[in-house]
Image 1 (tube, rainbow, N blue to C red):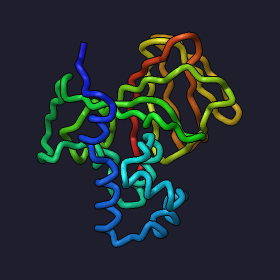
Image 2 (image 1 turned 90 degrees about the vertical axis):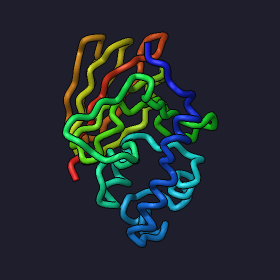
Image 3 (image 1 turned 45 degrees about the vertical axis):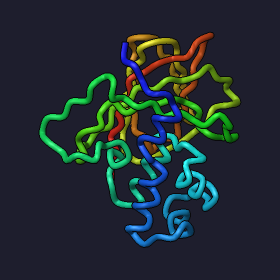
Length: 200
């Protein structure tokens, strides 16, 4: 069993907020510019940059696209890139929401499974989904495609006109620009391997 750093340390180690701010400043974008490019409010962007709000994967993808970088930018090790990259189990860093959960915020926990290669086209994650009611589902869309393989628990996938229930061993592949949401069914969290391809 892999040993993970605690959630707050993981988020702090990744310095996602710092990376977002550095990218914005490098592009000479104001918060207003970033808000216009992403559709997010200036308040939310400021909370992300300060580390008060931990952005879900879909939010990071929109930020990456706005700044012309890949999603891997937020998870890579500062060391260079190579043709073969190995990330050890103890190097995985969990990224979770803060204790003060914002209404409408996706509340899953995710960890990047690859931190070495900077210029990769796919981003693999281990994602844990807490038990959730239908009225708590948050729908999102972004460019690219996603593959999900369910390891534990039971998940419900919903789009505007489609519902699928997934059990361990089931998988789903879908285009991410389709408005979609996932929720855990049953009495315990669901766990899945998710691979995201971000169409830049």
